[in-house]
Image 1 (cartoon, rainbow, N blue to C red):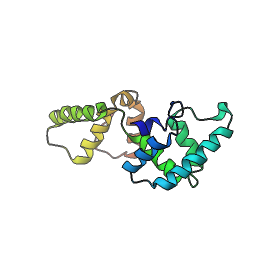
Image 2 (image 1 turned 180 degrees about the vertical axis):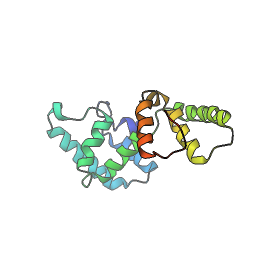
Image 3 (image 1 turned 60 degrees about the vertical axis):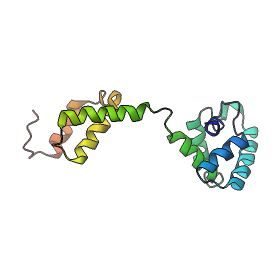
Image 4 (image 1 turned 135 degrees about the vertical axis):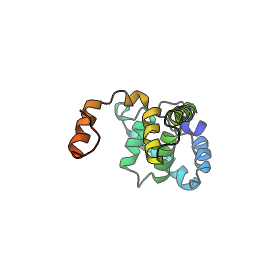
Length: 151
C-alpha cells in the first residue's frame, strides 16, 4: 500500500523511491529503469507550476500517458494502481448479486445472459439511471421482425 500511496500526488510520500521500487518489484518492474524514471519525474514536476501539476492518481495517469515512452515503468505501475480495488466490497457485492440472480433465474440461462445480468446487478447504481424506454425503442428499430412484443 505504501507504493500506491507514493504514486498519489497529494501524498506526503509522493515519488518516494523506496516505496515505489518495492511496489514495482511486486509487478516485475525493472528497478534500475524505475529509479531513473523517478528522478526524471521529480525534475519534471519541480519545473511545473503548482496549478498545472496533477492532484490525483487519475490525473497523474492521464499526464504520464501522454509521455508514456519516456516513463514506461511508471506508466505501467500507475495503471496497475488505478485498477486495484480499494476494498473487497465490490467482490463481495458481485458474489451476493450472483447468488440473487442465480436464485431468480435458476439454471435456465446461458452464460452470456448471466454475465450481462451480473454487470447490471453489480453496477445497480448506474443501471437504475438507464432510460429503459430508449433501450426498448433502439431494440425495436434494430430488430423489427422480433417475436418479442415490446409495445
